[in-house]
Length: 508
Ligand code: SF4
Ligand code: SF4
Image: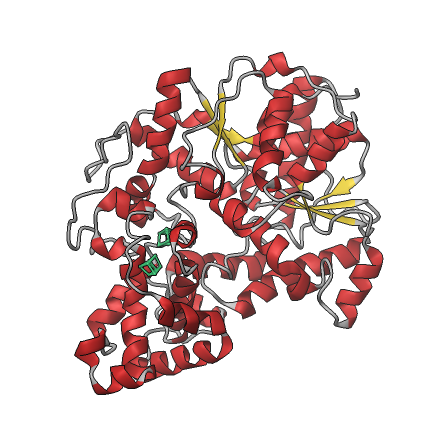
């Protein structure tokens, strides 16, 4: 790897609060979306002439729509409890990456326009006008928040910076100042069906190739069916699973689980993407439009169960929002939602996570494993933030932490936990979530990954950990990229179902 153009943080034995470096990340700015990208999503093509009025009006609209936003903007007492909880602040030292400072970029404009004190005595209450410089700060620093919600865990008032970030991004899109990476990808989902722009014929070819690979590897005909009407399970998985490394190994793992359990399943070319970047840009409209493809596919294929693959934010959207967005689960009450609820088998959780499916099969003795097949691996588990702090699994609190770990223990002999305070609900973000997984933000991503890299180094040094499992497509892609900056082998990141795939006995 060529020497990076920026200083990679030195990994310390224990987390240390960094020395403040004003404007350290002021140059980190993702590419702005082009006019065609914005217009395809119904946003103005470029920054509108009257952006200030429109941005303030949009903020007013969001304050009316989301009571939580107003509460978050009013409630902060600047106690400072959140300041050192953000991985981007810890990795960069830029004070504007402190969660409270990030919030204040929007809060100061809110106070100026929507509070009596801010209108009359702006300087006294930290109220500020929305200048061009402020708009630039919004663009830069709300695009340096991965919406991971770690800071909210430590806030005595439960203020959720991620929601403030989403509101800011919604305002930026409304004035024609959206971000290229997210808006381009959302356009691809609408046009082609997935984030990668993989057309149905290419998807069919890829799946066929994978079936041949599994046959060559195991001698068993394990199928990866596409668009098979009448299947029991519709699997919705991130498109990265179709060919990115190490993602594809987990897709093979899901296929082997369904094969071994005798469950008839299918993928869909219409809904060939679990990811939903509508959440990252705070757009309810986009969130819903993307999610509705899943409902259409489920109705067309007549499936009885909907299962979601290894993708953190996709599971959060599925678990927390699919019910009211699409009627998958209870909630939606339009005719299509009601039709789908009637069609789905209500003996199962709708939707289910693939880890819930595998865990249930393990508990019922329906899967058998050769754990020794994973003996070359000493495994740890990285909790992905959207799973840890935005969803649940199973029937008991904390299932989102225990179920993936229980699967790992069932398929591998060597498991080591990373330090408390860096896992479970306090997990650190990988540094690439929230729509930041783009090359022009590489410095931010590398630096933001440093708290996780510190915790990983501890267990690598103490216990020889050489494999970090996770259940998120973004985490996998991000770590594959940043691990070498910290002198780790990029192949040490992989999926939980990659471990399952290695150990499962087919035909058992
Ligand atoms: S990246 Fe996470 S910890 Fe940092 S401000 Fe955003 S939500 Fe909070
Ligand atoms: S912890 Fe909460 S109240 Fe305290 S500064 Fe942070 S956001 Fe404000």
